[in-house]
Amino acid sequence: MRAVLITHGTNGDVLPFLRLSEELAARGHEVTLITHAVYATAAHGYEFVALDTPEEYTHYLDDARDVLLARQGSPSPPDLLAHYERTGWFRHIRFAIEQTRQRAVKGDTVVIGRHTSGLAALIAAEACGVPSAWVALTPAQHLLLPITEYLHRTALANPLNEIRAEAGLAPVTDWNAWLRSADRQLGFWPEWFDRSGTPTDADIKRVGFVLGGQAESGELPAGLDDLLSEPEPPVLIAGSSGTILFDEFYAAAVHACQAAGRTAILVTPFKSLVPQTLPAHVHWFPRLPYREVMPRVAAVIHHGGIGTLARALVSGTPQLILAHSFDQPDTAARLRKLGVAEWLPSTQWEPAQAAVLLKQILADSSAAARSSRLGAAINPARSAELAAIAIEDLL
Image (tube, rainbow, N blue to C red; front, side):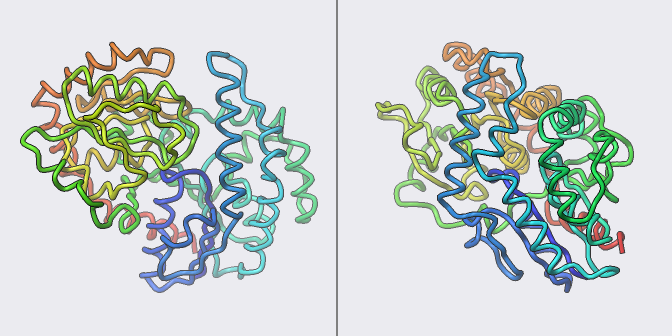
């Protein structure tokens, strides 16, 4: 079987696809992963095709941040068309379609795309006459489909139908049906996580959390082992691997650790987002191997990214989520219901309130126990295997 995988975004969107690509390749399939060039060094054992250049990726992240900042506190939807045009995204869609068409063999190929914005996968599979699978990383990607359908119907319909015409396809008239048209819908979360909030449709194959594996592992930088070995473990502040987080996130997280009297490890690759003056107890690192670090911290403060929360669950680490946007309030609410996290929406990122909640979860020993019990039920290797089997079954 030939598998062509297409994804884009930040670590939470890409690392599961890296792991799935590894799993499919290990099962003897020919695999091509099409994604951002910056992830090329993390790809092993399969063909990697760069969707862009590192400079284009930086521009894509910065523009996404500008779009979010422009609508902060506004009920208006983002200007998705302008974002796609400024970042050359329609060109990237055409590129991914062409790369897929060069590799697809009818009867022997499956195209796998990231749910919601993985439009190239749906178009390419339809043009090549091969089955497709859409991978959702969070339940909210399905729950927000009415909004997605509205944005595509009102803002993106014309340019997307132009691309479809170039591929020899008729225009889409029913966007709701087309956005649900993949032959297999995969959900990268477990059943118990689905039941902890608004449930998703029964036809979604929920395989469990698929984590980054090797991409989340590595050696500890100098000095970090000493911090992690302190009698009172530090708190991890896990910033996004993208630039979209509002500045208030870092300020609130740092203040919370300071108010709780805790050493903090702040992680973000973007030094410009870090508060200019950090207290002596806050130590900044551009990147860290979360697989090794997460089990050794007292708690983690993060924005609600699915990869970070799943890694924290596996590690048995209580969480404070300063939920940013899109799917993150939904995932945060699910974790709170499960008793392993507290959270605040972005409109309530008050440093004092963040400090209260951090102290609360640090003092609640049962939260760590519940995290450990849930973590014991997570088997990322089995999740990747189940996803691969579901894709193989399409042929």
